[in-house]
Image (cartoon, rainbow, N blue to C red):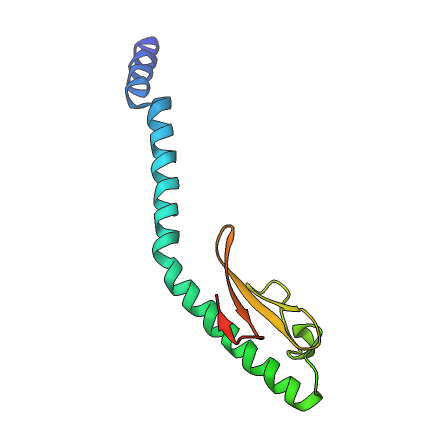
Length: 119
């Protein structure tokens, strides 16, 4: 009788097993869902990053008014500046700087202080 139950249990397990192609399909569907979800949310992220960048620009310009120069880094302007911020500052020379943030891999939105425009 024990052998009979083991055989029944084995047959039951084999019928419920997921095939390799089903696993690939599940993984692909999950990856596809994450990809689509990241593109759907991107306009909201871009808006948040741009608002942060606009605040940085205001503070950088206020720093220049006070000190008659642009800061060498954002940590001069913000005491608790987080280096892992998605917004980047690059002092090009004593007269202009660039603020940028990543949009999608390989693309960024950039503000040029020389012409005071986003590109």
